[in-house]
Image (cartoon, rainbow, N blue to C red):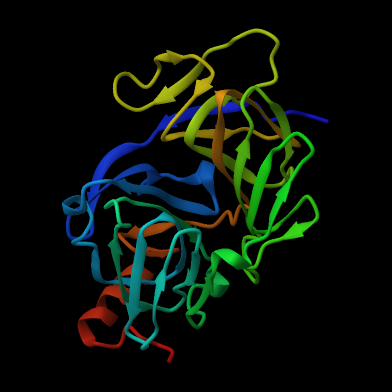
Length: 301
């Protein structure tokens, strides 16, 4: 049994998206090969409605899947195919954009004005870039939860874990998407398939992701020099990128630790970006932009 070492820790950076939504981005846009099949990860967490209410008005997607997980507040969504809905606390939407859709996402806070959620983008292989779009809207009540003997709690959104299988299925990269809570002071080992890239994103509490008997420094990315050593202790809005191995180990701090544990099978194909459109070649991007101009972007539905 081999424990996955930490490749690096990334502090999510503040940025603005949509019509002025303030959020934190852990990775995205650029070389995301170490995260393949994942392309982008955003944490949209706010307690000031003016920082998120403008939302994400109509915009296109092609060639990817977007995964929205809401923890507080709601997100209303609609698209050019006539689909519409509303995600509440604990709900998930797994949208396969495929050949292309135009859609919008408009967040609203809870009664205290709080909004919190995550958006993850997953790539599609070339064979599925132009597939028909589809939605998998998942209610919180349909997401299985499992509690281990030591109190560790896991919500299984996608993939199988500890005898439970998440409700999202038919995803090309065969990902696993878990919401994990480890009790204060507990040490836990969690299996991850050896052929997958994997990362953890901490959003409550803190802890260490290592198997060494002595404290060690890891390289961080974020404000300041990228080669600044940091302690293994990882806290709020920190993403831990793992190297290869069979298991991830975590030691929870005195307040416990809650994190997303995400893994997926690499697609290992060229990536050509143009904002929310991700294809394999520049020629395919030019075609997508021509489709937008000519009103032929929607291929199905």
